[in-house]
Image (cartoon, rainbow, N blue to C red; front, side):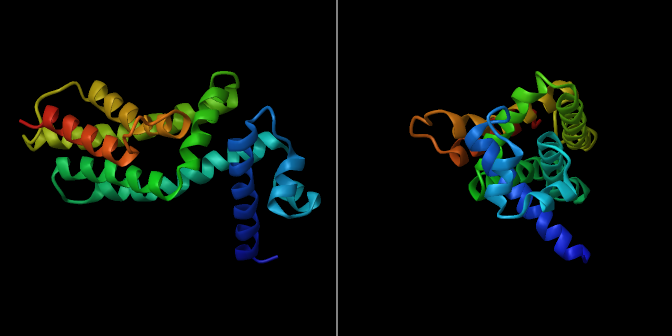
Length: 196
């Protein structure tokens, strides 16, 4: 089987797994659910993944790969740090508008990370890398005298937490506020606090 066909099948499996975990949760889902939703044979699924857990861990890897290229590209731009931060928020706004299901699934993975060491290890690594990326932007802003001299770690965690708060909109009543309005406003608040 050629690589493009394998990639297509893996994507089909991961798309099915995303829908299943959002609708049934990790504990309530099974490989049979993924088989049924993907419309592939059981043998085809097990050719790529030996267990439900392996499918969901692979789903996390898929997101990391998908998002990392764009996020790293934002930091590589020779733009002011404030523009980079704004682009970071805009990227997540676009991702939310494109597919809020991913953010809903993320809530389930957070829960799993609290109970399972493999998921915890995976998410510790993902969030550590994301924090480093945000810190890099803040350090650049301080160095270029664009930002105040702030604690970069605390500022980075604050930014990350506010980006992740988009999950709230997938789970609870939004009280007439759209995720885009919220994220744009929060981005402005954060930038106002950082700028000299």
